[in-house]
Each structure stands twice: as structure tokens, then as C-alpha cells.
Image (tube, rainbow, N blue to C red; front, side):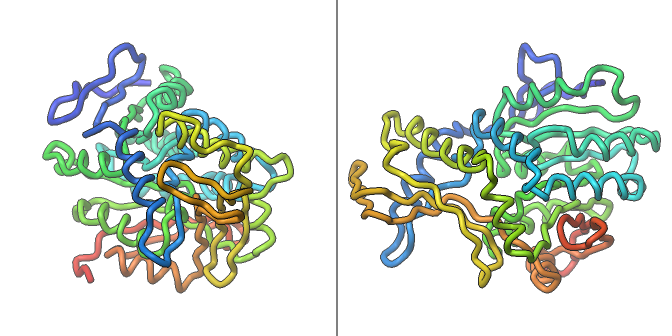
Amino acid sequence: MSPSADNGSNGSNGIKGSNVAIIDIRRGEIAFSILDEMKRMLRPSAGEEKTMPTMLLYNEAGLKLFEEITYLDEYYLTNAEIEVLHRYADRVAERIEAGSQLIELGSGNLRKVAILLHAIDKAGKGVDYYALDLSLSELQRTLSAVPPGTFQHVRCQGLLGTYDDGLEWLKLDKNVRRSKCVMSLGSSIGNFNRNDAAAFLKGFSTVLGPRDSMLIGIDGCQDKDKVYHAYNDRKGITHRFLRNGLDHASEILGKEAFTQGDWEVVGEYDAAAGRHQAFYASRRDLQIDDLKFGTGERVRIEEAYKYSPLQRERLWDEAGLTERAAFGDRTGQYRQYHSLSHSPFLK
């Protein structure tokens, strides 16, 4: 690896003691933002359901469990994603300008994106790849998997922060001047409801210049049984991943507020909404501080939306994006990557 020479100027700070370049772009304490969000979501307006932030699932322990999930046979998304990257990495690399920044939103490991980085390196294009993640230890572990000499032209480094931190970092003058490709290669977009997904992408689309692009992964699977088993595996690893969110919530509150034995994990496919959804369901009447939960009451923790062609077109339109190319697996329904540019006429 050839780390970037970025010294943390213009509002970012280099991490000391790391053998890779990791830039701390956080603007505040993440734990506090999760705490405030959790308190807000557990106290909804009258008639609305209680929810908890999905971010609770992605602490260090959760990221390791999620990596296990990506190797499960039932979790079709990763295998389909790797297939698409192997088939089309060279064509995607052709669209990346030499000297560009590649920013991967929510990067957890390099197993998949390395396929694209090798294609760019083979094309002789010097680019800076940035993996954005909330966890410093995960960034260090991930980037240590790319030993010196792996790439001749691709420089790998990390960004420590949230999506919002990453967006603000992209607005810095030194980054605005560079051509860039913002990537979301996994299933992160599906974790937003459809309105929020459009708003999220629109936030990033507005920082794109004429030479810039986004590469977005979308799951188009409409097979309800396949989707259900992807999130309710035989080994129970996904449910362990969800249960870790309860432990993380207690940790943030500073006490054992969400006792494991008091909650059941429920996963189900909602055909009408085109999504899989996961809940914590209370096994008895509970009170946590001023919060009351009735027996069987559900608290939504995660959603995974699937996109039909019509829903996908609406997403791009509402996000102010124009599709330039699409790359899919052999079936055309599971994992699809879409190369997009900013539309000059935002709605």
C-alpha cells in the first residue's frame, strides 16, 4: 500500500500509531449522537411505532458478526455482488478518471471492492481510495489486509466518521477540486426507507461536479422466500447480530437496560412494502426509565428494502441523479450496480 500524504489539514486529523493513513473526520462524539437518536426514536409521536437506530447494530462486535453473515449461503447478496464485480470491474474502471478520489460509504472490508481496485490498478490509473467507517479498529483491520506492494497506482486510506461527516469532508475545497466517485457497494441504501434513501443520495449528489459520479448497489430481488431466508439464516448468526444491538443500547445508556431475556428477535418479509424488517418484541410488560413496553410490543430495528425497476427509477429521479450505465448479475434481479451522475435539474 502507498498511503496518502494527507496530513489532516483542512479540518481533518491523522490517526497516530497506525500503519495506514486514517483521517479522523468526526465532528463530535458518535456515542452521544446515537444516544440522542435512540431517545428520540423510542418516544415517537402518538400513534407511531417505537423504533431504534440501525446504527446500534454496527459497533465493533456487530461489524464482525455482519462479516460472518456475508459468508452465509442464504445471504445471496454478497455472492451476487462479487459476481457482478468480477464480470464488470474492467468496464467500471474505464469510467474512473486517473487522479480521482473513490469514497466508499460504509465500508466494512476490502473483500469486494478490492476486485474493482485491482481493475483500476491494472489500467494504470492513480487514484485515492477512501474507506469510510465508524470504527477505528475495523478500519485498521480492514486496511491491514492490503499489504504494501498490493497496488502500484491505487493508494488506500481510511476516513473515520459517519455518513454526515463524510459528506462534510467532501465539501472541503481540496476535495471539491478533485474528480470523484462516491460508492455504496453493499446493501446500505436498502436500510433506508424509500423517502430517506432518496434524501440521502440527494445529499451526496449535490456535491458532484460535471466529472463526478456515484456507483450505487441496489438489490432487486422480488423472491419473498429468498429474501426472508437471507435475513433469518439456519445458524442464527443474523439474530445474534440483531441481539448485539440490545447490548450496544445498554452500553450507551450506561446500564443493563435491554436485558436479552426480556426480548425476542422477530424477522419477517413485508410483501406490500417490498422489504424485510426486523423487530425486538418484549416478552413481558417492561419499564425502562420513563418508557413502557407492553407484552409483545415491537420495536423496529432494521429494514431492508428491495427495488423493482419502477421503484429504482423513482429513487434516481427524487435523488437528482441520472443513470449512465447499469451492471447486473446473470439473473438481473439480485445485485445491480448503477453508475450515476448529478442531474442539472433537481426536483
